[in-house]
Length: 502
Image (cartoon, rainbow, N blue to C red; front, side, top):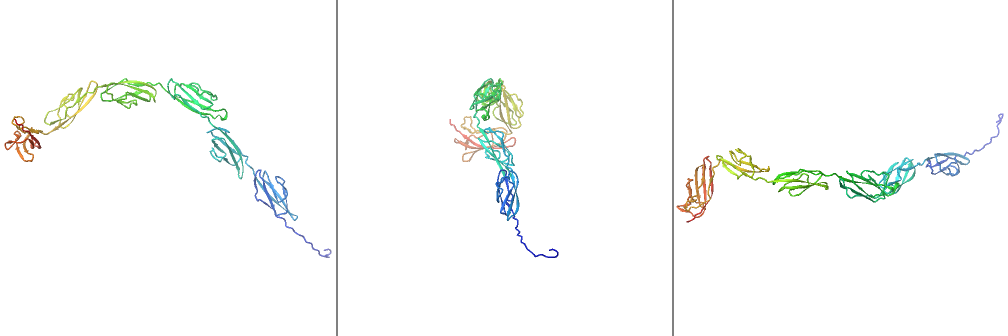
């Protein structure tokens, strides 16, 4: 338009091409230090990458990058002269700077070594042979033989590994013995070793000690300790770290001089026992052993039949014995007899009658009138036992006892036979007894037919029936009587008629 005048109208066409949309895969690329990763771009026809650091090419939709640190990669994509930009950050996780150390690289069989790892967050050990644990930065190893351990350390998804080797040397076989393990004071013993190339003795004698770093090939040593002594021998098969010393101890016991102690003598009564006593050590043996209760005791009881000299062997468990003797004198035993058991009626005089070969003493009983009399009267009111003791000139004693039965009865005597032949000797069957105030005698034959009766104690039976002497046989008697204390008794039995013709 000019001065209100319009020109003709013309048209033009503008083509608008859309900008490309660039996408990079993977979305969150992460690598470990020293590793590579591929990046792929999508959405354009041509691609240009930057920066030119740790990348295999700057053109193309696919590149391989090996950054050492986290880095952003930019790609410019072009399609129909239009371009777009995309950025992708590649995260780099650094590898662990892993280290493994050991407290020792050479050990002996049975020894322990500390294995230490550092430079990572987590740790694992392979193999686990001899290890206290398969995980952790500090483990203890006791390998049975040479071994190489691999330590794997991780920082998240990234890990690295190192190896460490432990040399294991066998120990020598040390044989240790002694000719005499337990010696008497003043004696000697020889210690003998074998199985190694070199040895360290400690001590080397009873008073000197060999320096700890001095070895010798001495394989035996004579020792004379004055008291119990431990000898230590360390054996080596080589020098240096693989020497692997092996140490043993041996005790040489020294028995102090034994002085047995016993009493000079002892006395015992025949048939009795006496206690012997010995001292001086811990083991004892008495001879002769006959009559000894436990001949291996320090204080046995003995019952010798005659005067005997006993010998005791005193030792320390059988070692270093010494002997001593002890006389045991045997004195004869006295004899004593308190007499037969007696029965007295309460109205009778009562006596004790004892016999012995020593001095008599009545030690127990009621109402003894003389306790030191062999024959002593007693006034007992009840039945009881009386004990008598006798002592001879050697102090040996013996005892006996007697039973005294005290009754209030009036005993009678009834013969078991008589001879009615008119020779005036035992011609009648009579009942003898005192204190009888009422009496009855009944005689029966074997068919229980009564053939005689009498109420006169003095009369008795003359062995006749109907005026004639009965035949030789056993006849039944029944005796009924009453005593002065108004007690009634009945005695029955058999009497034999023995008729002897002139």
